[in-house]
Amino acid sequence: MDNQTILGIVVVSLAGVFIGSGAWPMKMIKTFRFEHWWFVGMLTGLFILPWAVTLAACPNAFKAFASVPTEVYIKSNLWATAWGVANVLCGLCFVRIGVALTGAILTGLGVSIGVTLPMIVKGSGLFQDAPNLGSPAGLTVLLGVAVMLVGVGFASAAGFGRDQVLKKSEERSGSFLGGLIMVVLAGIMSAGISLAFVYGQGPVVAALKGEGAGEISATFGVWATALVGGTLVNVIYPAWLITKGRSWNVFAQSGRDLILAAIIGVNFAAGIVLMGNGMLMLGALGASVGFGIQQASQMLGGQGLGFLSGEWKGVYGKPRNLMFVAIALLIVAAVIMAMGNTQSKV
Image 1 (tube, rainbow, N blue to C red):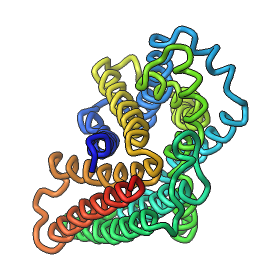
Image 2: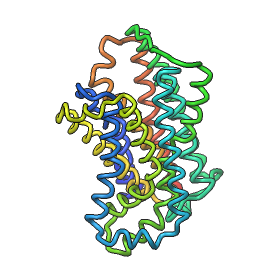
Image 3: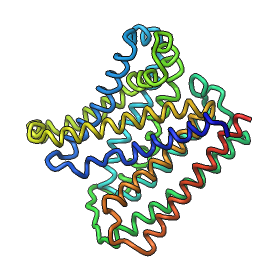
Image 4: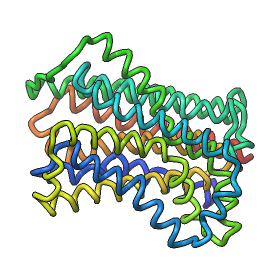
């Protein structure tokens, strides 16, 4: 395994940790409700930061963007919008079918789509040379996905067990069937954030580099243009909730919460930029392997945050053991997918 592959694995793993645990400031927010910190976080992470970095590092960014075919932006933003809708549906499903089941289905379907699609319908740039699904590398990556799905199942069972021990009664609204349909749709669309990059980065990165941008600032430029659809969904929805609740004045009540909410956005932006750069470092199969490893480490980051914040306090025995098995399986899945990426370079 060459140094660039190892570095790519480390980078996408860090991306998952950033995204999975990046909402830690939420635990410290006192005054803001969900819609307030989500509005600030997404506005910061999806709009302000990507555009600020892109324009600061590449003054001729708009000239570069103008040279990219319009269909590239349309394709990437359709994926991004799908991811934005998935985010909203995810929140609704939490109260319909519960957090544990929602998380399991969402991750399982998201990984399945995000890992396999780039091997069937090739992405842009170097991702166009990804091996086929039936190749040795593709089959190895699929094995990693299968192991990961088993790990997701164990994590879901652990979540149910934890809730029973803590006697949590999840408030649910609406029909279970309706929630199940929504979470399946959300799971399919949740891979959109990765696919927006996979199918849009090639021409955008080339155009920005042609105007003097570096690797990292070019990646920021991809996210700035490719996530417009997802940004609109993730900003308009909480804005609608705030308007409906007539609570815009809440932003003036706590400067501390405002800063914490912005940090959530910074963490998220750091995660998606690391994911994009890590995918590129991994080469032609990076779109599939990078997303798979990122999702595994994202779950690990989320569980790590849960342990550190006391969500597992007082929970021992079977639920905790199931979670340890899940963590082990996720690590094994990441290793298998990394092996598949190595095979693609032979």
